[in-house]
Image (tube, chains in turn red, yellow, orange, brown):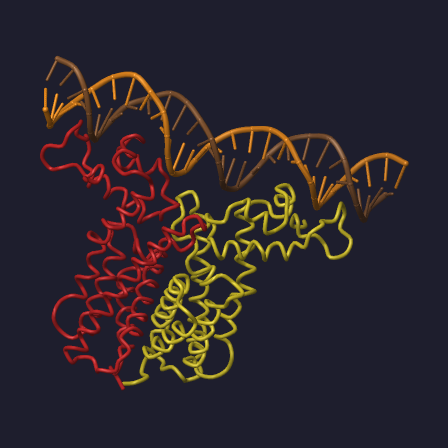
Amino acid sequence: MMIKGEGQASKARGRPRLFDRTAALNQAMRVFWDRGYEGATFDELIAVMGLSPSSFYNAFGSKEALYREAVGAYLTGPGGFFPKALAGAGPAKDAFSRLMMATAEAYTDEVGPAGCMISLAGLHDAPDRADLRDFMREVRERSRTLMIERLNEGVRNGDLSEGIDVAQIAEFFETVSRGMAVRARDGADRRTLEKIGVMALDAWPGVRA
Amino acid sequence: MMIKGEGQASKARGRPRLFDRTAALNQAMRVFWDRGYEGATFDELIAVMGLSPSSFYNAFGSKEALYREAVGAYLTGPGGFFPKALAGAGPAKDAFSRLMMATAEAYTDEVGPAGCMISLAGLHDAPDRADLRDFMREVRERSRTLMIERLNEGVRNGDLSEGIDVAQIAEFFETVSRGMAVRARDGADRRTLEKIGVMALDAWPGVRA
DNA sequence: ATATTTATGGAGTCGCTACTCCATAAATAG
DNA sequence: CTATTTATGGAGTAGCGACTCCATAAATAT
């Protein structure tokens, strides 16, 4: 069964849609990124997407469904810096250094809203939005898991000692990342965030002692 | 001119109010703390405050005015740990160590919602709420200023070297604090936050090298 | 006592928010 | 061709958000 609205590349039945679904989704993603879920109104969303209500519901189903898709678009788009910075050869510490610098850049990049679409979303929603809140928490957890996996790789490669608390290191760098997202929202610039990242790396186990 | 609703302790003219204004404010503060400004509905607010709409508007003026008062109540109440931990004798590093431990405790204290009422508020509001957003940014800036002042005290006392970048250190610890607020909202417990705080202190300049 | 001031209860208002309906358009399947 | 499927335009809607009005209550000032 086809997912409604996904449309085949070639010969789909019925009237073809008159707009670019991916482009519309990316426009919506930017609005959610800037305003959060509740702060993004339906009218603003369909305006930037260039859609009528009926076209919107036909293609995306609901505001919440759109939001979940937009999170996916963020993760594979502007949020792609995260796995990319962590990947790559070299010691785990180098990977986390790249991560801090890439985070500083991404959170202050003028092509998108300041900060991060993931870090601060779904933290203050009403009880009847518990599902979205859980969803965002899981997305955030996933980023910590990626950190842990990269740290374990460092242990396997011998650049981190065996008994080290990788979960603790991941917790710390996740916390710094989330905090950087807040600072970016409040106007901190790239250099400021970079220096915060450098300082965070000073907490890397066994660096200076 | 008296501020409307403040009422004198002794002989105010007119019918005396039938409720405890401070208690009602504290109830409202908890709702805002838990849900944020937009997430706290008028109906829920007046319900926990035990007020009718007319009593509410008579005593507090508007939802936004109530919010600003609630922020004040937070800062002098549950948020009081912040200046308290920073104050006190000893090296600046000890003060920041106390701050990290007190933050871990406050953000996970079961008597209130998880996290911080200040750290994550007003980050995703609509353009027509720019005033509230600015207000919250200023409150956050104030906490960084308190950190800088305490660091300068350390420089004067000789426990921090003259040329040190106090603004940078404050930026870093503010970032860690904001990040801890996010982690607390996502369910991180006190021990977890404490260990993050300990690790942050490892970044203190000149500790290990 | 009368006037003035402030508080309260409760119904009512107005705009916005997310969503729905339906007639019509435009494609393919057979 | 007809039937079927999907997309669109545009009007409409139910509910809820914050707020308002007004008659009445309860205090003080003179």
